[in-house]
Image (cartoon, rainbow, N blue to C red):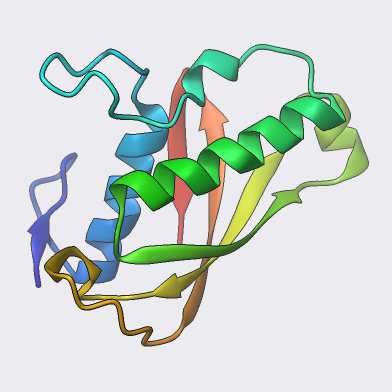
Length: 131
């Protein structure tokens, strides 16, 4: 399956399409999409708060739930904090997400074809997914 990059208009592969989907899910505020008020992950609402262990756990949980609800090509195995102690203290922590890759999950075929990992950073109220 091929898709279109939402920023450049270039053709992208299935995995890049799934990453783009995750970026959109994580960047969308709940209630922002008029005909799908429950779309999103609720992560943008948490940005700007002091990073505490509870907030990090909330981020991890919302990432898993957002992917589980809206991106069937991924099944999350693990979400971990990515960054040094100083970066976390300054609120610049990123996340590393390990997933089962199910390239035909959106078609109802949930066979796993491998394990993949990608990073997620937040800035300017938006999520950025790094392959």
